[in-house]
Length: 165
Image (tube, rainbow, N blue to C red; front, side, top):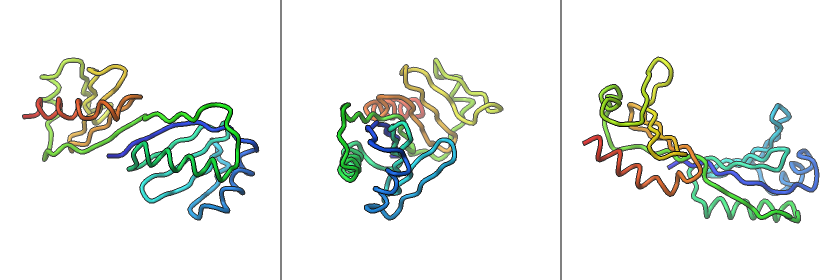
């Protein structure tokens, strides 16, 4: 399961100075001056992005506990005082359904609150769990977009599998 987490930290210095500090602790780190300016640190199963605003993202195959530990370690390396609580929320979850191939045209006829227009987007978009959006691709790949996507994954996966039988 791939996830995207976002959070924020207070930076005591500009992004380049932050990069110089973190570069002493992490080997797979890069700094990009391109818009948006960002620091990228690659870990085994996740990638960390830190922006000039102090907002950050984690993307990859990591759970909330792992991401929290990595973020705590980064904050310790920066020796920064945090005046706001660290917030990490799940933004996106993707997973693979155990199916061979899906006929999205036929499925779209049977599911309420969905949209499938192959000319515009190659996935069936289901809006049954607002504010979450669920995209189902013909390969069986599912992407859940929204704040509570990790908590809703089992419910959505079970519902999808029941509809596809």
